Image (tube, rainbow, N blue to C red; front, side, top):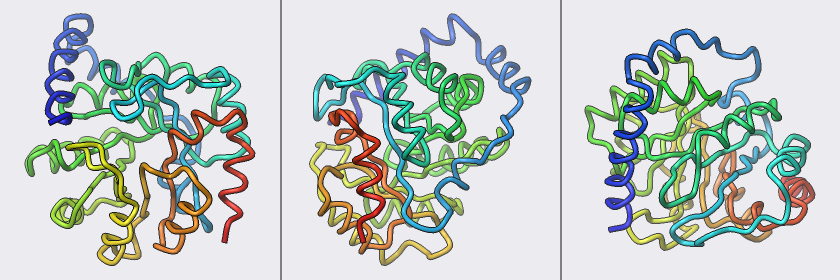
Length: 259
């Protein structure tokens, strides 16, 4: 299964990272890092109307390498003028991501940034704060109940928000048990990377109204955005469509205006 391979590779990467900067050192750096005085990831998604999270990624197992028509700097200028938050892939082996990309984005964007990675170790949470992330991704499918609870608590202690990602009813129930404030439904099945927007529609009936409801993956056309708005989502996380667009600013503005 693809997800299992990604997690195993992440464990190997973590050994490399800890050999360079120990967990004790990274934790100390996180404790010394002062959160910037700016709207949080949660606040960016909680305002009226649909919010858009613009993603930066270089590749994915489903798409392969992605050739962007604009530079990272140009992309952030477009995002700064049109989206509400940024998602940055930092997973190295399957998404060609890097913590360095997030640090670069932090320097040129005032928007809240989601560190999108496969978070399986406390080290990654400390590192997220150090590199400038405002939020992290918690994927229910790769965490047991104890990890889920502990990592969610650690996220709060670090002053970060968590986008808690689910794909089915059981994972949604687990997210509600940790009292997640931001729930993301991934329309892509991480076991085989097939996409069904109906996943968001099916789970929408069980997401409480007081939660921020985010749709992730498979959003590439106007009709997709209209469909998800009808499902009651508060925000859409969009990767491929923006990465392949020569002008993501205009695309974001159009999708925000769709009724």
